[in-house]
Length: 344
Image (tube, rainbow, N blue to C red; front, side):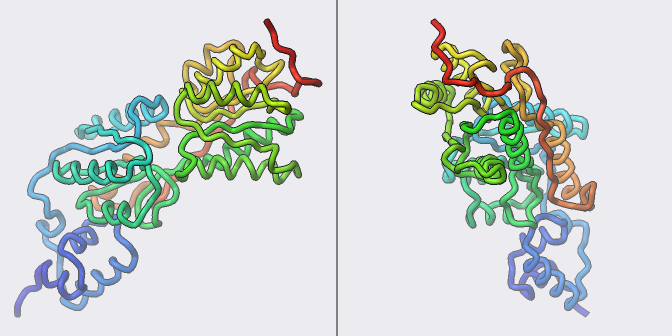
């Protein structure tokens, strides 16, 4: 009786040998792919060998991490936490960055890590999730974990609940009496930005306030934020509160507030994201929408190691949700009774 091989299984299932290997190793594949391969193995009586369980002939002990901007302090906290957890398992982190909204550069970076035969990949996407990106992940040939909530369900992912967090922050300002609030956020075309905007508008809708009172301003750089905030504060009906979701955007915002001679929180309430130095040393300290970088890092490493070791991840799910907390400080108050006067 002829023993079936992994090539026979691939031929029977109508897929590639690499796809069969991914199913055998418990890596991310679609449900349809898994059913095809499982059916072919059952039909042929195929029993995976040690070699079939890993087509790699050597381990690099390296994990790739792709981000849009390594200088972003929020990413920096995640990167440091991931690197620390990987070191404890004898693994090294290899870091690469690519510009935001540059899908071609993103795909090239994924391929480069594939050529370097890293043992796993963490991806914080900088462009919209597309069929080519999903395909690149599915055919990467090693475990992959992503940051974000809009990937297909079979791709292991860690997602921060930005919608709930921003909704909570907005509701807090509305309860203080604010009715015109501006949201400054990056990545408005991507899942994090879309979720933030959705939570912001949901809070206004639930409060029964006009949609026009929920002002959204997309931002990338701090200097852009300074100009944008200055423009907002000099409008005939300026917002009485700002939600600023970016550390460098916060720097530009504080510059504009100073230049416009406004006082926080007497003239303007302010909420930011992350416990950066800006939020703690500013006077008054800034109310913050906080999420735990250690929790994100734990989730990413857990998802990768589970795939590498051929076991279910802790919690038995390949989707991990990270919650946000609103840390109340002294940068928010009831809105001024009239438009604030410029302080010379």
